Image (cartoon, rainbow, N blue to C red; front, side, top):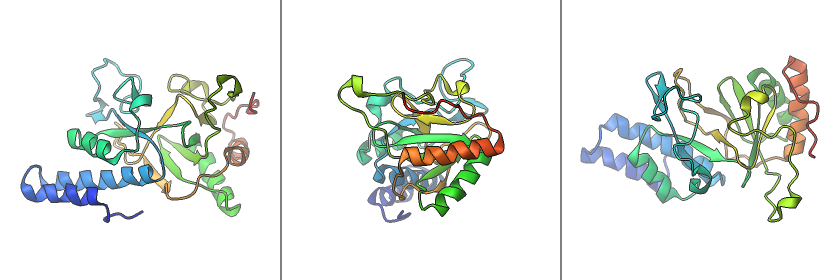
Length: 234
C-alpha cells in the first residue's frame, strides 16, 4: 500500500499549511485516510462509525452497549461506499471518526479469539491461503471472499455461525460476518485506548472462506475456544 502517494493524502497534508487545522491533527487525518483508502482499494465498502469520547461513545445513546463499535447511521448498509470523494468528506467532517466495512458484498469476515487467530494465521501462511487479517478487542478478523448475494433470496443458505451486530454474544468462539453485518476497520479507536490494526494488510487477495473456516475451527479446538459444531451451511 502506498503510504504517501495518494492525491487525497497530499491534499490533507496541504491543508496543514493553510492554517485551517493544526499540523499534527492534519497529519493524523492523513494517516487515517491512507489506511481507509487501502481498504477501499481492496474493494471494501466503508461507512462512518461512532468513536470514543473519553471513556464513552460519541453517540447520544445513554449507556451505549457497544461504545465506538457501531455505525453512526442506521442506514449504514446503504451508506457504505468505496467512493473516495465521499470518504474524504466524512473525514473532513470528523477527522477522528471510526469506520466499519459492510460484509457480504465483496468480502466476508470470520473472527476468532486472538490466541486461536495467531495459530490459524501461521497455519494459513504455511498453506499459502492467508488473506487480510485485522486485530481488535482481543480477536483476529480474517477477511475472505464472500459466499455471495444471489438475487433470488431462496438461493441464500444461512450458516449456523452467521453473526450480526446484535448476536455477537451468541458466538463467543468463531463468528462469520456476511450479509447484514459489519466489522470495524483500522485505524478505528476503542474506549480502552486500543485500536483496530492490520496484522496482514488488505492488499492481499481474499481467500476461499470454507478453506479458512476449516483452519479456524481447528485452531479454536486447539485453544479450547467455543466453536459451534454445526458450522456447515444449511
